[in-house]
Amino acid sequence: DAVRHFRPDLPEPEVRRIATRVPGNLARMVTEVLSAGDLAARVADLPLQGPGAEALAQARAQGRPAILVSAHFGNYDAWRLALIAQGYPVGGYFKELGSPALNDRYLRAVQASGAPMFPDTGEGLRALVRFLRGGGMLGILMDLDRPQGVMLDFLGQPTRTVLSMAEMALKYDAVLVPIWGIRTDTAPGFRIWIDAPVPASDPRTMTQALNDAFAAQVRAHPEQWVWWHNRRKATHPAAAALDRADSQG
Image (cartoon, rainbow, N blue to C red):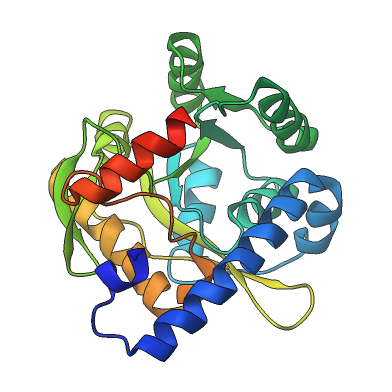
């Protein structure tokens, strides 16, 4: 349903093709994230490509903070580990998982790189601010619905999107950069792509630019996005009800 909602232009065979390939990508991503040491070795020497690579290198040289924005697409840990291996001071922001056991396992895996991880708690947010003020580069995934979001365009549909990434970039004079770990069919299995930095303006305009960059990747590689991350709760009552039922079950 999510593919049909966001891509009503696609013929039904293409919708089914995407839907059947998404679970495989998700399974590979989870396996890779939980085996972070193996993934780190694969991506350590990958070139950083795209129009934002030089800007990110300059920010590191200047000690300027950065907000690295991605999504549950391809493998978000591929670019994180590649940057860490190449000397970038990358940390991550995350929402704790519902299962304590799974949350602990996830944290052990992603913290094996030695990079800081900041939970969505008061203490975590305070540590996150200190990290940015010290010139850190913070990775955030943007593709989750949040009640505090505003309605912006995503793939031609009104979609609730938080402004906090742009607001932080403005507040802390951080470079705001969309970045992607795109899965490929050739070894080592990924391409690290960094889009051009989003120009500083106002939070809505900047966040719309992030949505546009994300939409471009989804159009190019639709099977690499976890489509069932519910982006429709604010505009699609049935999707909201299903999401509530899933969380209660």
